[in-house]
Length: 131
Image 1 (tube, rainbow, N blue to C red):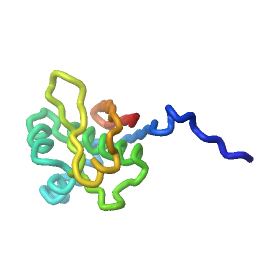
Image 2 (cartoon, one colour):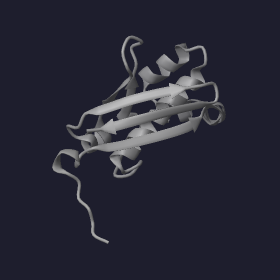
Image 3 (tube, one colour):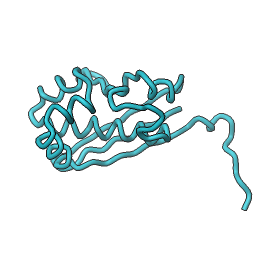
């Protein structure tokens, strides 16, 4: 079997997808409280989620977005990457987007990051495209 190489214009194209149960995030938040939320989410994300009618859906959507980004980057939480290196920004008027810092910001480099998140009462999903 020969190894195929990507066309140069597609070489940096990466996709990450994640699906998480809202109930799982609710259980973690209830069991660990601030230890969980402050480890995974920035202060701005916590404030945003706590304003929502069902905060656990918002937490789950952001958790899923961060997982999807780590999958697109291809490293997971290794090489010094931290949850709080990724902040999901949602101003209510536009599509959510990431603010990146630290190791995750370095791993993404100058690539464009596209994010789509969605949730139901039971599940949250996210897709990230790096180009």
